[in-house]
Image 1 (cartoon, helix red, strand yellow):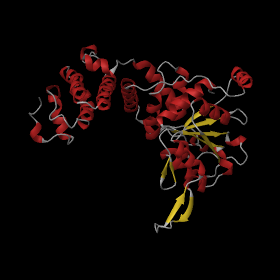
Image 2 (image 1 turned 90 degrees about the vertical axis):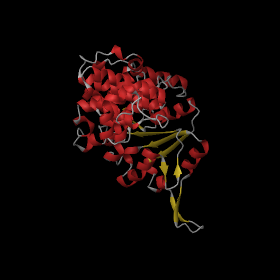
Image 3 (image 1 turned 60 degrees about the vertical axis):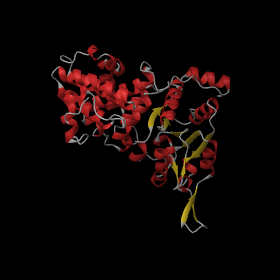
Image 4 (image 1 turned 60 degrees about the horizontal axis):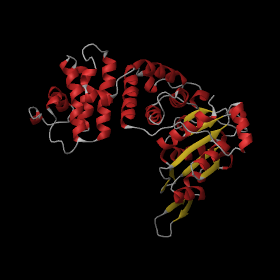
Length: 376
């Protein structure tokens, strides 16, 4: 179970990352009150759409004949128009497990792409949350369909006694301070390197660890999508915020895959990609394990891609060259292909440090054959 302070942290991190979040708890634990209080604290208008009172038209709009002769169009509901007019806000999909499969299907576009009907897209600054009781505690409850479940970060919410007492005293108007942070390029590149290195080492956990039972499929499980979502959320959490990091990992890729990833993450202790670019000699390229080198170099390539400058791109080849010089060009090959794909338009040719990788870039179709001797 997740305490209120950690829930608020995850809600901000997921909201800013564009990742929908689902709060699960028993009835009467204050899920919707928490969302309203969060909206008030962040000056975000809150729109609540209740599942038991909804049908597909609440999410795709009401059909009508376009008088301009464009056939049948859909008119979005008022809640969507209000969020668009505000340019920001929180959309809470309440009582999600009371929604039948037909309505869940209509909600997919809202949860994943923020599309309401054919023409209306909710602003980027609209955070999408949902609230649900366990199906066994819901009147006419349903398990979430797997495609819907796999679009949310699942958080089991249970406020502590102290938090309940504080809520009673304050009238449920205050929320704990969020511990979410602003992502940095270095942190993002390090996380991308960590996730990709882990999945490379444990490929079965990319998507094949999906649970078999209907109940488990209605929760969190690993997929191509949820690993990507996890990277975006973790970038907005402090690395030492153990409670929030664990809740995000378990909430997006499930407990089984999540435990393996956290164990691997805690044991890797890799250098900062920016530090490696500044001084490649801080890595023992000849003796370090291949999987760790792979993670380091992918972090370097990710950082260069995010920077998008010719200078950073050219400097990023230096660690790859050091790895190749130490007799391990095969380990650096994947990072070389990644760097080749993000070559800045103003970089007329790769630097001299990339010379050892030119055959790889040619084979990948990233350079022409006549570029063989053109490294500067």
